[in-house]
Length: 383
Image (cartoon, rainbow, N blue to C red; front, side, top):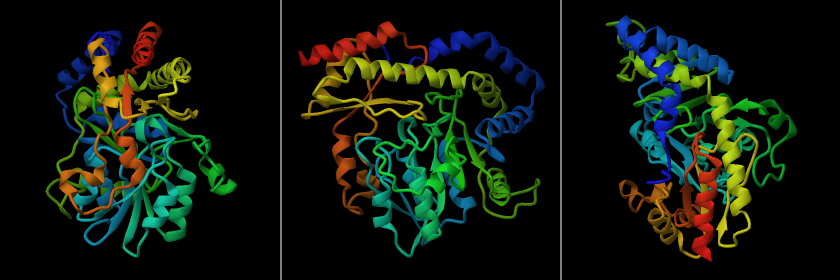
């Protein structure tokens, strides 16, 4: 592709000497799993996000799985989540023996609709699992008020939203949360708002490793202790296993790469926002597409447009012919995947947007000229 959906090579070349040097030091230390580099990364991420605890794990999926276990969620419980996300969100709920209950989303943010959450609550509901999709914080003040009213836990899926902040400027806001609730979390990073947060460091993420990796965040000491035990076979110390756990340890090479990259994440997220603004300026007047709405805390892991009139796949093919990459996140809502066939009634907004969404190239190193080229190609498609 002339303009790929993502180009990791550019970022590596910019940081090559730092990353190569950091990896070499780990190789020389021979401390490869849960060593000093992991501990330093955990401390640095906890400080960055303003949380008491950060616990490195093997992947974002494991972060969700262990987060659910640490909250004692399991057989017979229900967890309300969005129908519009990557399957790992629902899969983690099912893997702990609970049942995912799928709420619908909002058209302007692609995030879970708090009103739909309320409709799905039953006596079996134990938690709410919002996803900050594409890097856009969900309506956390409303979600926290719902959780407090019904005595529910909140697990934040932050896989696409490292560095995203909640500013109380939720898209489509109608002031349905209290001023006190909103003010209490305004300016906080996602992952430090609910009871527990789950992050992915998959290479494509805003803060990405060169392999799998994940992080759990919490301000609760007891939850943190359980999460640390669960990542190492349910033990506080070797050969004294107290529960069934997992082999889910972040390795030191990934941790040292992430430590290098963490120094740049604010600048990279700002660059993504600048690119998104430029796209919006260039594409905002097209009648056949809907550009994403903008809020200050959105870190644009993906820049996702909506294509009207059933021409999404046609536009995607047209861009590919021009050498421009694009992706569909996500073509099938989670509740309609084969694994859950026949178990759920489709949510209408999620179903609609699954046929409309198209993500365009966005990464910090994407030049303004290439943004213009992508926009020109889309404009020419409609000429």
